[in-house]
Length: 99
Image (cartoon, rainbow, N blue to C red):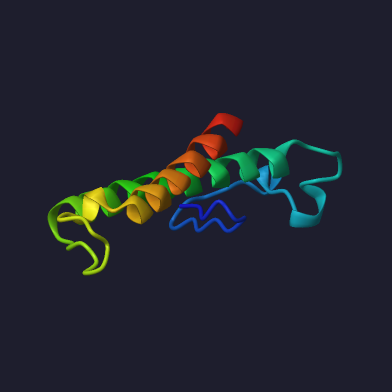
């Protein structure tokens, strides 16, 4: 089991001493690990953002009401709501394009 942050928990497994690497020696030479881990984190975060936007759209379509002074009958027709969700979606697509 690993947390991807460097902690590994091993239960009831015999590991020969020759297979152990002290933490301070694991990165004697430069590696791409840091960059790779950052890309993985960005991918996870953009996935979370995508799900959040999808949930927001679903909520606006099924459970919300238009603001009383908005001049529209449905929340999904409110130009401010459309703009806000559009802005979030645009930012999400920009982040996804960088992956």
